[in-house]
Image 1 (cartoon, rainbow, N blue to C red):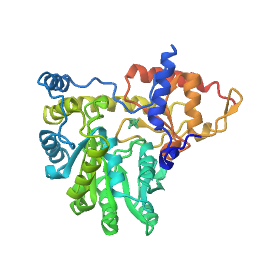
Image 2: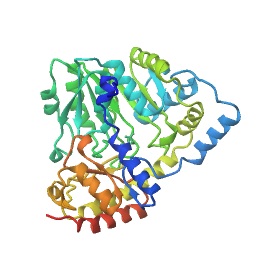
Image 3: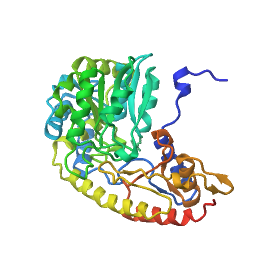
Image 4: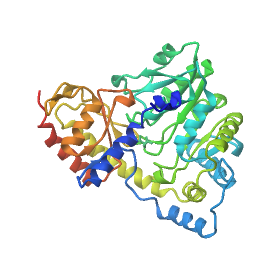
Length: 399
Ligand code: GLU
């Protein structure tokens, strides 16, 4: 058998990207699939951003750039962090990368080692645990109860610490639950984290998809955490730029320089043309961000209503942010489809794909096997079509 690196051999493909790939494959076979799988805005990248890329291309911005991004991009990120998050960073504390995913993976590889434990409150995005495992450290899942709105409590946090705990990954608004921490909840968690001295990784990629007002940032609430904290963000969701691959991290200079050293060896600069587009995205008029967020708000209402009307689905918490609904389908587990028992969220997502031709992501890799994730970053027409199909499909389940 082919011998692969032990850590690489142990990782599975990303469940979110795999679900989307399956939908694409079925479409290629001529099957009409409605995909609510990957979290990807259906909007086109705003024209002003595309135009900046065209201009960059025309003036020949096609060469290597500084590994962590051109100075102008870092300045734009610095200004964004001040404008949106009230955080003051120096450009030497900022690194841009090919998507937030690369920043996150590089950061985790930079900070953690074999023997370390990294806390991941669950449900959590599928790739956090894989990134931690790749670094050699161990993910330690901290389950957050649905009855608590899927939010980590200071008590649960304190109980999760062991002498090996070195870091925590927080994500508000959350993928997949849509949960958002309030300023007072963040302050309580921050007090525990400050005392612990562990690294705090704050994944902020859904900050602009928030339906109850501005999302507070933990490092704004507790500025002393800046010394042990790194803010990670992306242009993918905010500006409908998933394919451009631009993300960034801001944190202590030594950490950021180490991430840059790693990036210089394993990839290099984020795409030069995408950097030009990102500068325009961050510094130009921000109206498109608000327009898209308002549209997501409307879709959220539709999706919550449709899910709550489905027999066996339970969605006690209205997602306060991001663009996912994460219903509990435990009442339907144990049903059969084509003679086979459906035992978990992944099995349920497979049933939805096979019977209803609706792609979703099962909850297993999010750490919530009784759940299924639907992205509502899809048109109203597709959303209605998807839930019509699911409604019809559920009738095919046997007991
Ligand atoms: N983060 C998005 C999702 O959860 C995009 C796919 C990915 O990179 O996981 O669907």
